[in-house]
Length: 109
Image (cartoon, rainbow, N blue to C red; front, side):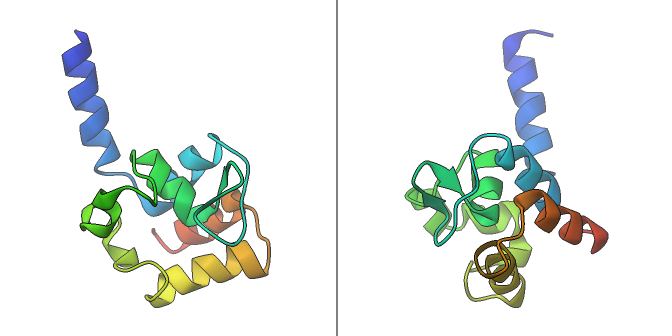
């Protein structure tokens, strides 16, 4: 397989990541943050998922709907019940992103 084929394979796989898988991948990239998607060099659970698919909160693609293509259950982060619960678990309960991913996986997400 040449590098172009590998890249296409990786891009196809990223498009099929479950939210729980994306959080686990992103959680390995930087420490956990609280109070925002990306704060002080860290990321929250939603930030970790974003980063796993190559997005950042300051990336216009997030606001342009690419996030919904990857994770439609989040729709508009901060406003859907699922996004609010993830934020509450991350920021309010200070649950680890891995524990949040476990909870999401249990729900099939």
